[in-house]
Length: 121
Image (tube, rainbow, N blue to C red):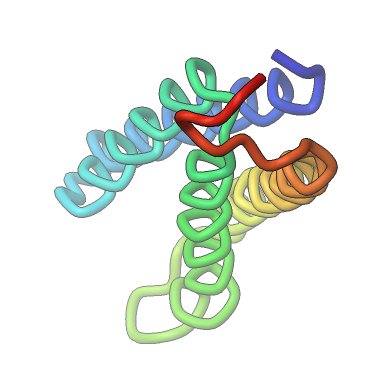
């Protein structure tokens, strides 16, 4: 596993744990489900060398970041500023690391020769 993937897995795991704590403390069932999904994707990224796990984490973290920026800070019951900062930083870190890891995986795959099953070496 590359060092970038390790950082991605670690930050996604922290993000999942923070989301789980937030979901349990504030009794937000969608937050708990989101935390479980991010945790599964972090586990998947730790086991995989492909592009799908970082792509899934990129989509999840980017959607959470957009929600933090445009939805959670506004409305009738805005979240506390410290929670917005914590989840904004965590989701941005996961999104940035996932994007960098995704680019490195895709570029590495493009450099490998195409292997067709059933043909010589």
